[in-house]
Amino acid sequence: MRGGWSTGDEWWRPMPPGASADALRVLMARGVRAFGDGFVALLLPIYLVELGFSALAIGAIVTSTLMGTACLTLGVGWIANRYSRRLLLLAAAGLMAATGAGFAMITDIWPLLVIAFVGTMNPTSGDASIFVPLEQTVLTQTIEPSRRTALFARYSVIGSAATALGVLAAALPDFLTMWTGCTRTAAMQLMFGLYAALGLIALAVYRPLSPQVEIADEAPKAPLQQSKMLVYGMAALFGMDSFGTGFLVQSLLALWLYQAFHVSVRPPRRSCSGAAFAQPSPILLRCRSPGGSGSSTRWCSRICRRTFS
Image 1 (spheres, rainbow, N blue to C red):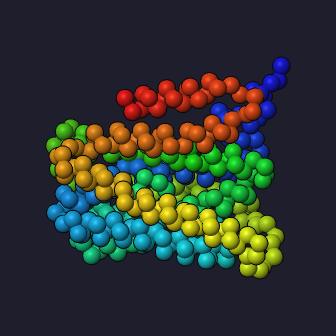
Image 2: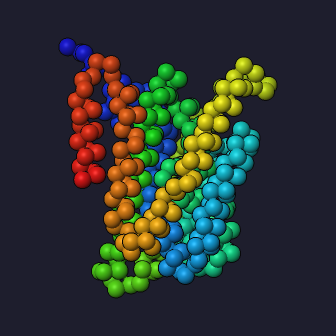
Image 3: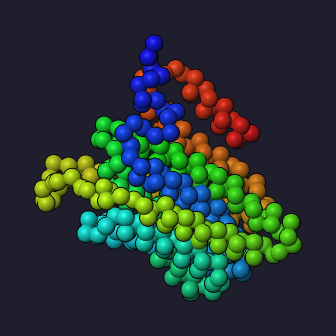
């Protein structure tokens, strides 16, 4: 009686068979980063309001984070094959720590604009940062090709679930204000300090990566040929998706709720965290064994109902 529960490909297994220790390290770092991205996405515009910045200044800083992320990601794509992937991940984690420290200590508009552009702050609900292409490239070297989809599904689920927990943690400044009597600004600066600490934790997780992550498949050094139109089409599709997402950036949604209805971070963070948690569920369930039952779908539905209730 081996059946569908003993094939090794079940969706509920923490890691797919054959994944190396490097894959586990990347998934751990992904969770650490996503947790930080979850709470800074909500707290960033509210923190800027507490500092007295205008709507134009807040929009400029949020735009700067998105433009800087795009430029850094494009630059990493050009140089990634010339340098160690491990070294680039360590540098990115150090940049994350520096970004959090900068937002925690600096309150002037122009330095914050620069930090937002060159840093790793993410004002969206997804993971848009220089880490993603590097981590995904490393993951391809940690498992055999036939099981990469299962590994990437777990990568997506861990990131979204950790982001949801981070959104819930965005309420901590309110509790700190009640418990300690400190100002909201000081409490939020502590959260940016936590973001910096998470960057250092990610750096420590990346550090033991083995030389195996540097191995690349031998491929002819030639421009794209048959696959060129497919790559361009996918790039256009992702571009349109990102353009639509830009109309409802999570940070600006939280700011609108904060100013229009005079609510604290606690009510909006519940709905945002529920959306982030529910997003990856179908991805993981599609990676379950063909012999599995439909009980997993009912289990996911119960979790989503409890999250949104």
